[in-house]
Length: 243
Image 1 (tube, rainbow, N blue to C red):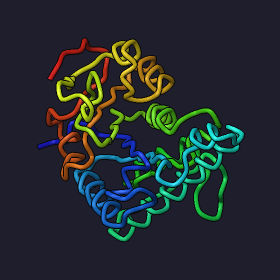
Image 2 (spheres, rainbow, N blue to C red):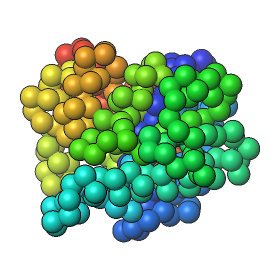
Image 3 (cartoon, rainbow, N blue to C red):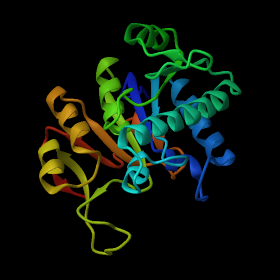
């Protein structure tokens, strides 16, 4: 079978790297994700990644405790660099050529973000990890993922989460929560469904970039979504309907 998508941007939360822990990076979880990313890459898919930093530092939380919001957000950006370097190491130990491009300049450990260079890396079969968010405070890594996905002309933004799609309410609290197979961008914004922040959703809507939300914890799911299997929730221009 041929993969459904030629070029993807995979958005991972920092918390995805924690495994069952409460902080930091779980080695076993990191290795599993790297193995799955390599598997997809070997299908011929061009892969870019954006990884959040919430497993190390959350800018919003620090700001709510009195820290200057801009300073807190810059610290959060540095956390994403740490996660990106960890993922790069895990991939390169599997002989996958990988480049980290950071929106904030840290020349000793990462390239600066240059769009054309990123696209050249992808064309040369290298995985590109975008670190440092957008390089600006007040923007989330969800927004960074949307922005980078559009800049590199990704076919889809894959949002890997801890749940198997988007629900009308929290499935952990409400047993009768309904999962959606498909949603429109407008549905997500009007219902405040917390798929991604509103800036990220609006960017995707304006540029018609589809978002596919799926469960990262289920082994093999990255390959399944890339091959077009009907899992998770697709957010696009089409009308919504339940699962």
